[in-house]
Length: 289
Image (cartoon, rainbow, N blue to C red; front, side, top):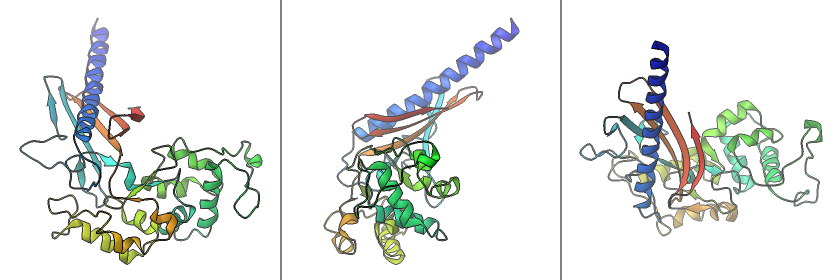
């Protein structure tokens, strides 16, 4: 009987924690649906909710079941309470190979094959068997599988691409995405990291200037005085990019990564749900742990 009671309690606590985490997902999507997304920045309530009087994502109590918290690590090692947009990352499903090569070169400067790896990524996702210069794409027959010739379904699928090993993947994984799985994804210059901005084609000085400008007078991103760009204010920077890179620049976001953790009231169970959702609530990815 004692073991049965323990197992029952274990199941109850874990179930409660899971549903609390799901409550955090629902809260996040509701906040996203309440916002306009033509221009998005890091100080909006979906990204960095710091309202102590009306918290949305930190230690939210749900009846007597427990609490949930929705947060993520920011670039400067702060913890932001909210969700992160996918458009701050480089989408390997449609980013020009020059952008992918730029990201690899910046994050792995000793890698002499960044251009070839980027071309291999482009070959993997496109539907043809030859490169623009007419040379055949790598066949992968030696690896025992075929080239996909279709869009990536997950970020770790890039490990199947010739030239991408685990070491390189660990360096780039925090800066790439596959969502949406479409050829129309953009990069939000109001939320993109320094490596992502450099990958677009900006010099490191220009990329830092963009970050300083959007941070506002206090120089800290995610605070009330942030000054996000729109198409007019970013025009001077846009002229510095090659046409393929300029074509994937945006100022708002439509897809978001939510990491919600539920805690049972007795502290015995914790569950985390990670999902990628659109601003209208469409779920593209879901994982429970």
